[in-house]
Length: 430
Image (cartoon, rainbow, N blue to C red; front, top):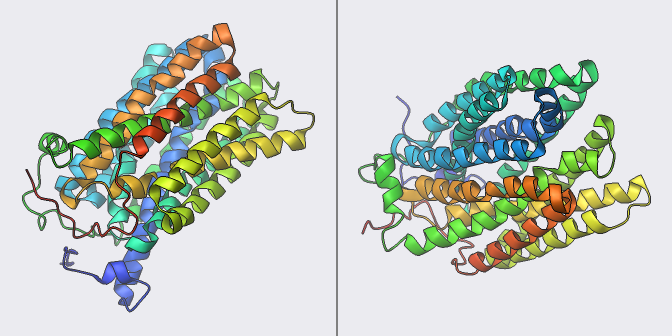
């Protein structure tokens, strides 16, 4: 029987200096598994925004309905994330990670069968439940393996995998829409969502939790785990983190949910042109994720995150309102949007994992991230209906600016946690 890693084991957090080969191998597999899970999540989840135009045309739906469907999926992800993180505290990070990857793969593929708005809402809601659960489970798993002095970089690396998955879905979108008529191509695209389920065996093999739930006290059931977040020792961190995530994710969704549609309707780009812009944006996003991790470890969580938010706001404004005289200028602007938006997201894993003790880390990360996502999900719906009166670009900008301001205020009510030892932080139940 394999030995579970306990709170007294220190080798995984020192994999660079003197760790045994088996520990180094396990550490690398955990990094790969967490990044792969999030990357595959990105592959599946970004398909909807890419195919939105074709879906609306094929099923004769309005932009407002499209925004509502996106909102339904994101609200469902709040529920999935809350319970996914709490389940990971009770049953272990790795086991729950496997469950959710299979779940979002199957439900994404079932989206291909939708014949009307009701069926789309059903499958996207179920996909959202599993999608929401993946990130907090992966964050809890990887953050407990990371060394304190490099946690920002490692968590940003995991976050960057979303860009890789997004790039994969963008390329798949271009290939599928090039080979099949638009009214059926989007269905083939969602069938590809089954691919992550095939990778589940790679994710699971040789991976163990850094912290055994049984060694941190009696594991709480999911409802108790969520209730724990509102005890007096964690209440302030829970509320501030949730408000912070509403702003960060709301700004992200305000831009990314409609960027392909904006490029097609406002800039007049077809699939090939949109794909090029999206890939450039994704490359910028990858750089933004990776780069933000180094700044978080060097300068701290709050200064780095504030700078990233300001960078994001200014880049989006420049993209939406700078007259584009050439494709090269357009490429530069969309690259900056991708880099800035992702730099604001790159620090989320380290910031949130350091706010909660080990016994409540999954629940804390899952609740704040996904309730934040659920509230922020109303942004796309609001933009969808505002666009008919004020235009898509202006609506994206106003909603994004308001939410960015909220995230900055909430951030500075959280503690600065750079360099914090989180593995031995079990917390005292109140």
